[in-house]
Length: 314
Image (cartoon, rainbow, N blue to C red):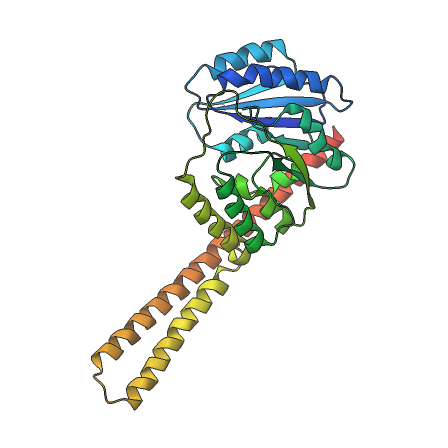
């Protein structure tokens, strides 16, 4: 891996899978843009298990452009893991998530970064302008997300720039990069939005298929549960367990006041008591897991603090 510049202000993280046809043009456009800027950039391209000659193209680009750095996944691990690998390799205090397919032009990267450099925002997301495939699905996804999470932006899953500490606080979960804004807002970071033109693909094909829709919905529910009950799971399961016990009690009262056959009532009572016990046991187990996660987060904060102190002393 080529050594990075001594200091950089912005690290552009570029997940790429089977993008050999677009990468050369993408990096060339980055070079043109970066030459006109006062802030210093590096581009970290993560080859996420490509089956074409993406890696050989990257090796040539890395030798030609000093600001290009590369990471390689031997198999496809998804955008969330690619961004994580790029983040761990990066050097800058500001990170940018940008695709390599040229649907978004590198000329718009400085516009995403500007509000963060000016201290006006911790995170900036782009709002797609232009026609694109699956726009209807995107509107439904964004509408549900805004309703469920009360996020003050229109387009959650798009190009974005953010302070490094935003990524520090992100959970390491597959596909949760779509909810980076949601999680950042929940942690108190400020988020803003700017319009970014969307262009047709000039090569390759989209990695998004209809099969991703149910996965996205389930991820949305998982993020909602994490934010609402992740630190107090017994609150959720205790309510459900209490409701089951209450139902069992109500049925028991009905059993005492009715002359109908008792077997269906006893079956319902037993089922409600069993479910209530399972919910309470799940909640208690969840509390133990939440406590371990809290200890892990605190340990991570302390390690990060010591690393920062060491770098300051150096």
